[in-house]
Length: 314
Image (cartoon, rainbow, N blue to C red; front, top):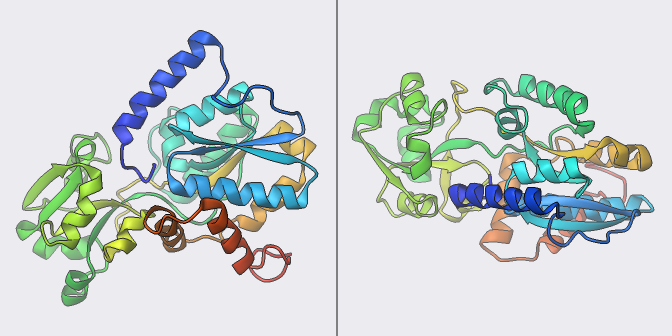
């Protein structure tokens, strides 16, 4: 989910791109004439996907004989998936369990994170000859956020803690989620409670609306840098209503056979980036406008990936 700003538009764009690729037999933009010694890493439009592609690129070029090229701003996981099936890209920098269970696999949502990871790992290997690596540690899931002040004054930590106040709260959500089946608002009400007033709006407005006091609670995306920008608090989904969207890289098995070092690289990144850390990294890119490669280099250096000691080291 890109920083999830223009989900609907991206989906339409992805479908259009897929149609063009199918009808013309063309590869993804910028991919013609790639070298067989170059590993192509695809990333989505959201910042965290680009950041993880940069990290993978830096580590692969340091620890293997291969070069890398980045194929950025792919519109959706569907486009990434088709790109990997066609051989246009060798690695997807970020894939999300909840997205691919309902998308690439066409299965019903799975609420348990461990079960979801188990299913995508098995099914991607069986169906697509691809390895779904262990999660980086962060999840870009739906969540409910309130101001830090409100949470502190009322001792709010979980979504359930909001229930005594819900009738009087204004709830800001993006337009698509209100009518979404399954994990949309109707499902939310059955699991938790009704809010007093619900205001569908553009996703880009919800964070500022909460910070400015125009909304009391908002639907947020857990790794969005604007949570930090507007000093909001993400509440624990204590009833596990929202499906898990744990992030992992996915690698073609042929690429892993040729460059088995990549398996060790993804293991070193496994479980090393929390949702809060990714929120911070997204903030640096989206709000502070820092260069993604520089952010990736700084993260790897700070956490000793270049020295093979400490976090992520051998």
